[in-house]
Length: 312
Image (cartoon, rainbow, N blue to C red):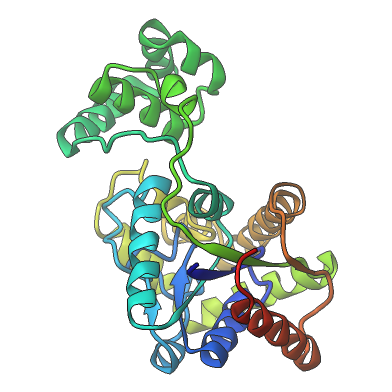
């Protein structure tokens, strides 16, 4: 059976570097499973692999969508499955890396078979939301789909619009679709590595990395993104650091205050990721210590053994 290596972990845990080393060692490709790294325009702020790293081994699903588009878990899953199948045809091992737990679960366990929403319905839904606002839109959804409205807080704009557009496109509540048995996108064996470094060390890495991003041009990236005049409800505008740096560019806060706020938001996000991976992801190999050369060698040895072992 075909094989996939998963490298999961919170932001700044070192998972991209480990995935690159694994792919080099096993003649693999790296497949992105980060919901923000799929978008073009924020290479620095989303910590995408460098052009040098991308030249070392093939990388897939990085910067492939314009910020104006929406990448759902279903859309990403279809793209990732296609990337894995392409790798297998070329005799290579897909190494899927990222911190978006929903994406990883979808690839390994499948998703409910919700049909794609046509662009015109999606655009109409966003226009309605902009006109009605959170509270009005939530009230309207409650009239049409009380089950989903009861599950969603009025401030959760993305999920509110998702519930509305699915109902509009299919005539069925999103709750009904979610109750359908999941459909697995791949027939594969998975080996999953979860990087869960000590919290204080992870937080320090989050802070240092964001400070470095400022020196690398993250502020200019955000400025260019804002110049596009994008719909404020788009996911890319919720990428870590975008809101805080945008506030500075609008003259609402100092750069130092924006950096401090973004670092705090990043630490909170990393904490939520750590909790999710500890409780929701059954890893074949958990790594609670900081990565070292000897630990990486141990992981590579385990993966090589996995790749040589036939499924029982």
